[in-house]
Length: 473
Image (cartoon, rainbow, N blue to C red):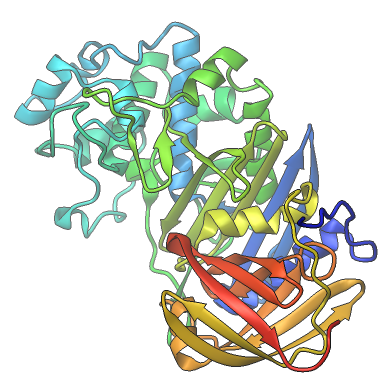
């Protein structure tokens, strides 16, 4: 029988645990600044900040610091369109020709044929429109300012060829969200940003990205990780795709907005549940990839415990971002950063918020291995050996793993610097469950027995460890 753990760490509270994880993550990844927030059942219960929002001026990340949202911006375009669906002003299955046909250039044979035939808002939201993502011709994007989503669509979509007929297959496309936000303008009669401000995000610190401006004191500067350290990223205007990548927010505002969506305060419950229903291709197959299905703009998946998760992540120069929603728990979690880095960011945000959620019921009891000094490990048939050190600090088991070079290769990826010592911070009594803090994010550590554990790596790879040397905890 596996012992069931029902207690929580007594001395180190959830806020302190999550802040320690956030600080350790920043140190491991070398990202200049991170912000995170947890919303639960109607209120923000934690807002965490770590590092700098402006390296040159030595300004720290604060609760009100805004970060680029990158592709998390897509959730706002999809939800704005869903508001119009709820109000009867947009039919998600109807061809967009009626609203957009007279507003776009006429010399787009492929796109005009698609508009006339079947291209609709549901396909744009589910990435099944056939529109491409960024292409070689887009290398110079970001040097032109636009005043509306329609203007951006007119400028950047002209002459594009569809990759497949609308509805035939899933193909991720930020340009599809430029067109979706243009449809919001066409069907609402308002500028896209104004519609968001008055209808979709009223009263929240969510708006257009101003990372390149010195006039906004709350905005984090964007950085790139290089071998010489974090460097200020080149200026980039995201108005070509406000709907796909062009917004910014504070972590608290983003988490609270997610909470509003769950509570039926942005769209009603029926429309929310429709957004969270898998969208189907013409063949009847559900749209999606990897470990998620596509709803109306929202990714539908499950967390490490198998619980339903609604989410979206983003990556662009000067940003890595994610929003996770647990509808059953009424929990919303945001994690934002001011540099592009390679990360399993969905699982990272999940583990970052673990101190605020119930412990899994299938944990195996394991003491803090303070007398263990070595470990043997196996990953994909390859064996490794290394040293370790653990101790209990304020009631929390904490430790370090020294990685041999071949094993370190599995935990490191550019552009962040290479690490060969990783922190382990407990998320349950003893070392039953923990977060292994790596350059690619937080990874789940689970005890398999008193001296055995496993770590779940990206791609469903499993690192198994046996702790050796000395007595027990």
